[in-house]
Image (cartoon, rainbow, N blue to C red; front, side, top):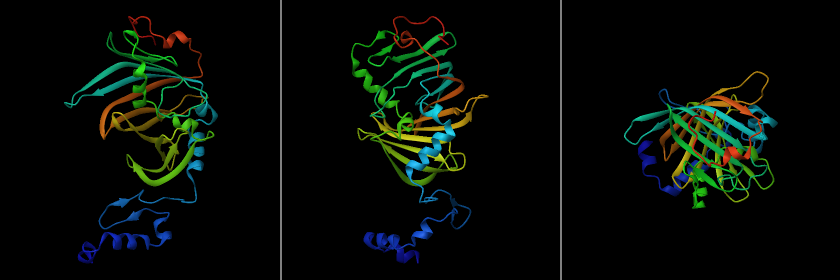
Length: 279
């Protein structure tokens, strides 16, 4: 049998695959192969459930309306940076302030407002901000505002909040496993044509994965360690690992969050370098 398959033409092999019973492909149990290997996410479970329905369920699991329209978000914790030589450096104080825009037509373009600040001990290691129009670093406002394009390496997760807005589409892809967890996969397309791939845990409906193309290569983020606070529906990933072309560049360890706070515009305009953490 193996020898026969080895000599099948590409067209014949494709025809054989297309002839497989559809009900077998869409089975409700994992596909067992010889030995101990289990292909837990090789086919779509519940194929009648479309991408929009999966996104709706993910919204509810993440915090419902609070997740979709948080207004603002503050995260704090640590960040581990991995070098090309295999070494690692820990930024022991790490924070992000975020003001979300009401609408989003391009999932990977800078919008709203964001500030990222990192310290290693008493040394400022990173300061980067976007005030809605201009990008700033430790030297202040960057004169070459082509720097705004670099945010395309970082903006992407927020696409899921706008995924059900007018002009967006949600296309279900083949299921797969993310860090050993069976996941639904949904590709979102924004009104500008940009595509963002999300992985949603089949059991908990937590967001496990986001992937999209960037100037640095194919970017993936993997989310785990979710936590919340009493009386708050928001579910926050405690660990976010970032990869470019399959290589992990860093991982954020978030230990606290705050949603819906008011931030002065000055938070996102850098006129001077702070002498100590702003958080």
